Structures are given as C-alpha cells and as structure tokens.
Length: 206
Image 1: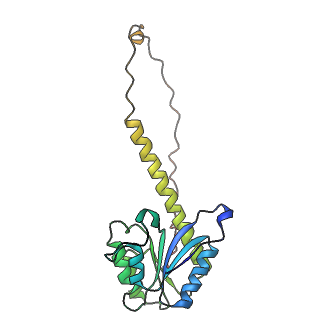
Image 2 (image 1 turned 60 degrees about the vertical axis):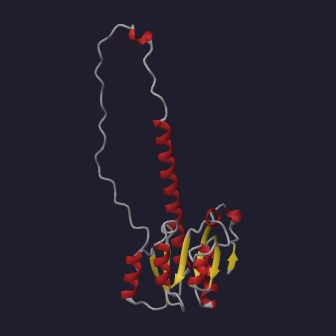
Image 3 (image 1 turned 45 degrees about the vertical axis):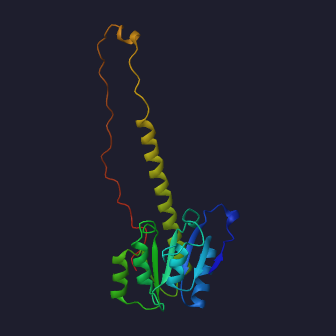
C-alpha cells in the first residue's frame, strides 16, 4: 500500500483523499501522479482485496479508524485478478458506512455492456484509459461541490433544530392592556415568477 500527499497544501485548496486500486504498477503510478497534480492525497493499492482490507470490509480491522479514514473518492480498475472492479463496487455499495463514497471505474476496454452494468450498480462514472488530467480535475471539482452541498444541508438542519428548541415568547401584560387600534393596510410587493434555469449535469456522459 502506497500513500502519497499533494504539493498543494500552501495553495489553499481543499485536499481530497482518493483510494486508487489497480493491479498494474504503471497505471497506478500514472493515476497517482494525476491525482497529486490535482491536489489530492492518494492511497494506492494493487488489488480489490487490499482495498477492502484498507476500508475494513474484509472482516478484519482496518489499519486506521473509520473516522480517520475519510476517503472522498475511490477509483478502481475494472479488470483485476482475484476481484474485479465491478465486484469491489458491489461490496462498497453494499456497505451502510461506505455506500455514499463515489466510485469511479476505469478500463482500457470500451465495452458498452460493462459500462452500463457498473453505472446501474452505482458507479459515479466509467473512464476509458488512459485517464487524462482533465478527467481527474473534473472529478475533483464534482466531489468538492458535493462536499459543500452536504455542509450547507447540515448547517441548515442544525439551524432548524436550534430554532425549534427556542421557547416562544409570551405576550407581556403591558401589551395586553394597550387599546386596540385599526390595522393599516399592508402593501405586498410583487415577486417575479420567472422559472429558474435547470441545473446542468455535473459530469458529462461518456
């Protein structure tokens, strides 16, 4: 298992942790380099079994605690001995703890049936090798937008929860003793009903 940090710590960009799985040493080094250029921390393993061991899904304790793991993206080759990328995908999506981690399948063969099967099983995207820097940067931006969206939703839910716990103020006796006065009419401003543009797809279909 190889771990490689990025050189972007001083740039202010958020560092993502990517688990790269490929039995080919050359392909593993290529994806490590692309991810490092894109300001990602990379953990590279050579098989699906090793990936499961790292994630703690092989029945044994992971080398690190789950809270410390924080894998933002898993990129795996499709054709590997012992366990294919498709089988690894099914294991991850079958885990209640890890199913939300995006999984990207990579392959040197552009087989439509294989692509469809992976996407139906929950893969975020299917990339045909050689993987390009633009592919990695696009994936990184997509993951960051998802992280920001989750943080906003968490903050909104927390604010709603805090508001619901605030006791309602009761009217004071001085207010109840005040004489009633006629209510003046309130002018209502017109709100534009123009439809909002639909949100574009974050990832292009390949």
